[in-house]
Structures are given as C-alpha cells and as structure tokens.
Amino acid sequence: MKAWLIEQRDGRAQLRFADLPDLVPGPHDLQLMVRAAGLNRADLGRNAGHYARVATKPPHPIAGLEAAGEVVAVGSAVSGWSIGERVMGMPSGAYAEQALIDHRLAVRIPDALSWVQAAALPVALFTAHDAVVSNGRLQSGETIFIQGAASGVGIAAAQIARMLGAGIVAGTASAAKIPRLAAVGITHPIDYAQGAVAEVLLTASSGEGAHVIIDMIGAKAIDDHLALAAVGARWVQIGRMGGASGVLDLDLLSKKRLQLLGASFRMRSVEQFAALVHKAWGDLKAAVEAGSIAMPVDRVFALADAHDAQRAMRENRHFGKFILEV
Image: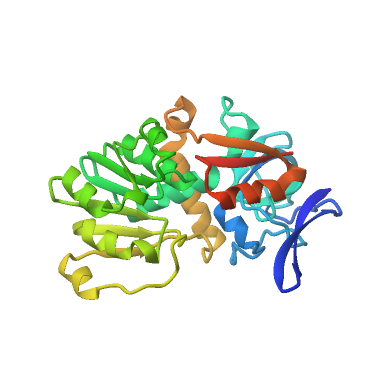
C-alpha cells in the first residue's frame, strides 16, 4: 500500500511517500480501505504517537488522525461488523491506502454522506461534543464563546451550540472568514485582528460574559478569556495555536469561580475513547443525517499531494477542512 511515513531527518520530522506491506488487523481491529482522510492541525507536528494509550496502530509511523473507508477485513474478536460496510473514525495512520481502527471506535457512515464529507467529521465532531457538551455543559439560553471559530472544531462547536439552543454564539476569525461564520451558527462574529475581543463579547451579552469558552488559541488569549468569562464559566482548553504557556491570574480565576478544563484524546484508554465517541454520535447522529450539522470542505487533495495540503494548512487561510482523497 501507499502511505506517508513520518521520518526524522536532519533533526526534523519529515514526510515520505512510501510503498509498505498491506496491514493485518489485530483481534479487535477493522481493516479499512481508506477512501478519504481529513487533515488536522495536530498533523503538522508529525507525531505518530498521538493516541498514546490506544493499542491499534500501524506497524510503521504513518501520518494522519481521521479517515473514512470501507471495511475489507475484521479481527478475530470483532462482532457486529461486516466486510463492505462504510466506516468513519479516528485511526492512527490515516494518510494511507489502508488503515486499522479498533472496532469500538468506528462509526457507520450515514448513507447521505460522501467519503469526503465523512472524512471531514470525526475529529471536529467528537472533539467539539466533548468540549461543548461533556466539559462545557452548555445549557439552552447561555452564551458560548468559540476562540478560533473558523477551524473544524470551531465550526462543529458552533453548530452543536445552535442545536442546544445557546442564546449567543460568539466566535473569532480573520476578516476574510467573518462573512462565512453566520452560516455555521455564529450569531456574533468577531475579527480578532481588530482587538477588543472581550469588549465586543461583553457588550453583546449585556455585560454578563460567556458561560462557556471553547479555547483553541491558548496562551495568547488568556487575558481575553479571563475578562470575558461570566461568573461560574466553564473554560475548555483544546488548542494552543497562540502558545502553550502563559501567566494566569489565579486571583481573578478564583473570584469568578471559573472552571478551567483540559480536553484531549491523547491519554484516553480505548474504553474511555469509545465512550466519548458513542455518546457524541448518539447525540449528534440525527442532526448529521438531517444535514443540520455538516463540515465545510475547503479543498480536496490527492493522497500523493499531502505535502501541498499541509503547506496550505500552515497558511491558515482555509475555512473548514482539507481532505486527502485516496
């Protein structure tokens, strides 16, 4: 099979397109013929050990964290799955013609979705549900603020918030992306380049602030988040595009009785991961099937063009997802 290997060269992680032996499923695995794979910002780190506690991994360090494909083989301990079924999920090693996924982490693709549409969903959908619902505990009528609203996770979070009846859904993006935010459920788009993010949100919420903060930025946005948080807000930290460490005013955190929560798949066991996936899919399946939750696909690349796709992602001009089509 063709796959993008992660290799260390000259002290840096590099990608190499290579011919590798076909995969062999373990007892709990589904072997997929990959039809499409989604790109994620985590891919730019080129770390093959992203899901550290999930045993199902390819025998080679292959890039990629989400895919849609057709089941071509099942492991000896697998039941309830058949060859030929259409599957989406978050396997290690998705930049390839084949991938392995623990059957407990796989989701059947609704008939209405194409391979490309399905490959765009798993990481954004499951991350956003974990952030907004499980950690953020968003309630109808509350205000949610999504820092990085034009990202895949941001778009999914906005649509979930809209489904849950949030009163105000605010989010930041660059000026070029602002016009597209309304279509995914952002009621109050904010151009982060103009500054005054906290002031805009506080004005929109009549001074109350955000009850839930979905943070894809990290250190650079700490002061804004402390300022715009409502008393008792849940601040869910997902991404660190603006830095991984900074100064946090613990006095203000305490005065506002804020909850700062980390959300990641990286250190979850397969049982924890599976519980998260199936809770999210149980809540969101009907909305995906109805089309009220969907992920915009900015551009589709061929599998062989993964270098170009990652280069485009680094430029950060896209809205929604980039997809590799196999």
